[in-house]
Image 1 (cartoon, helix red, strand yellow):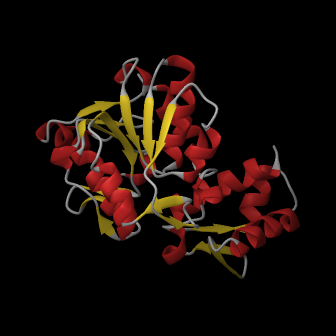
Image 2: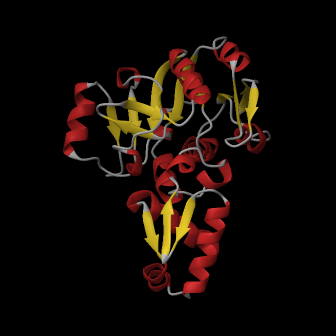
Length: 254
């Protein structure tokens, strides 16, 4: 296993358990405790964890708005499972609003291999850069740059989004709660997602299983605005009932 793969799995454990310990991790990955300490040191430098005696705890304040490079490695396998389920929801020739989430990025990677003549409107600098020479027609919202998330936000981005009427908004979030709704970590991006869903005939929400029941800082748009939710494994029955009550189609691997 490569070092970045090991750190990805450590991050997944941190997100589910909120803390990790050096000795069990060393045993799990069959590496030395010093190797695990170096992994945790790197994660601490990135602001993800706070190290303590024997292990580390998830840094709750900074973990919710991680640098894009870090977010892109968390739960990557789950994101790719979700991405494979998206193409049947999108027709050739469709227009799509795409946010800055790493899950949406993975979905676009799959869509460019399976769909023709798609138009993508996005505030993601990573999508603009990495899909510049793809088969997509890519439009930028413009706006002020949030360096941490490589996103474009603000009034000019909102005005740009309002100029388009699209077939689908494909977005993700940081958490969903039956009582608190659909949430994100910062207000500028949450605001822009609201405008994206306003301009779309269909709203497709991509959410991996770790975000069910997670609470984040800012509410985005209500569940009533979501047409379809795609996740990486079957949700609990209470969630299936909840989605049914809100008229949301739920898609997960069979």
